[in-house]
Image (cartoon, rainbow, N blue to C red; front, side, top):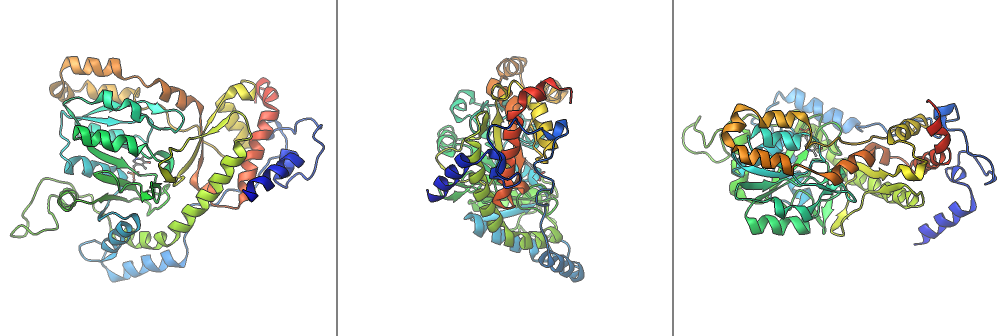
Length: 447
Ligand SMILES: *Cc1c(COP(=O)(O)O)cnc(C)c1O
């Protein structure tokens, strides 16, 4: 409270450019400062914090593994230690480390019995892997529109899409913000369909005080280089059911489970090799020592950024549902309303922002209308698995108007930008204000 009042008072007393401490006090009546895109001075010249962060901890963990000669999880202990530590950290009963997040999702589909010819409910606003695993399972991805305010799957539109072939739903906790689990879990339970949380961007995020990824039948994480916890490549599955864990393990280990079933080379099921290496396990154990503190820093900075952006009309931070007690902020997601920026197109806004030294992304393109999906559905296999009527109906119903709009408006900042001092947040806001003040001029220019 005290902090908010101090900041308001501060912002009221000085122009926005001075709030960041770069320009000093200026009279409010001066004309807008020249945007960097048109040759003016940049708001920010230093880069944002580098990612990943590492030091001696990672170096010695990797060298130790190297010298041990135990590079495979069957020989060493790093992967098993990581699994134990990540399960403990997230409050899940079991954790299975995997080769990557894509395989965590693929293993989940297989372990939960999703088969060719089944249907799976998915959001159109996610990384493409969420959809690819469904297609590689030869199941039908049925797209549920986005809630434009939160950038998450619109839980209000889920139930109408369920039919007798629906076997699973994959809500994605996009950007580390949470999908509406209060609405989704009862629907899955009622219709007896599996709920697979795609928590690939949501390490240490929480719903009602319990970690994201620990709520569904399984929760899947990516530990790929860009993610908030990473080992270059890597993934993890959380689950509470011992039998399900055994099925996941077997599928990721060429069909051999943890529980011996007689002689060596005897198999429980079919599967792949989707195991994590001991090097990844070593790196993750070291990286995990930083995760809580980094998550706290991102959260504090993001909250502060939200409080300043609130005062800029036309930049709308993504809404969090009341159940989201901690946002993991893999992305800081917002929407850009060009009406408030003299009609300046988003692409040009992003370009002007980058010129000020603030890199931002326009986010995903709509997945439901990607031509490759229609091609897959027209393939021989899909034509055998699904009736002509069902595929025709799929096409007619495959409309996500809110998501189309979201894809046109989104503006994202990446997680590493939230790891520095508060001043970095002020510079982001300052750059946006500066562009807004000269939006008409930017719009007219050919830059
Ligand atoms: C990163 C990501 C994946 C895939 O994870 P990989 O480790 O790259 O295979 C899946 N879903 C979402 C939402 C992601 O962000």
